[in-house]
Image (cartoon, rainbow, N blue to C red; front, side, top):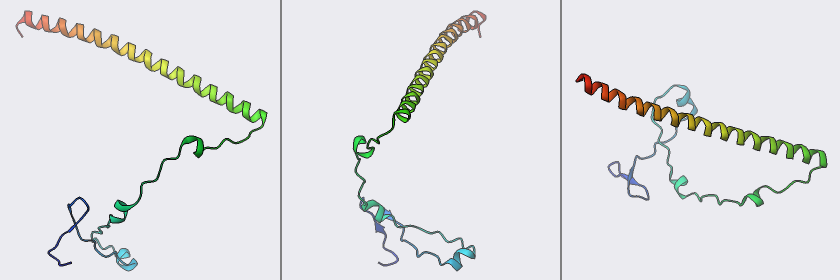
Length: 118
């Protein structure tokens, strides 16, 4: 490749030519040369396939007390999540009330400004 030619990727866009990597001595000396990595290997890499959850996480046999402790932990987390969701809904309702109050106050403010000629 000549110095004037520009390398292109699969989409036809130009890429800067890759520079050689620095030696450990050059790195230690504090050279500020720009290193351009060639990402052509990444473009050609195959995307990993998704594995269904049932196949990815096989069930593990557990004893009675361990199973019961896990069930209790799951129920406790579910209750905590539901509690947090209810708190969020309550906060959203409060915000809606505040928004309605602000809208009413804005209407009053506009009316007062109009009466004062502002």
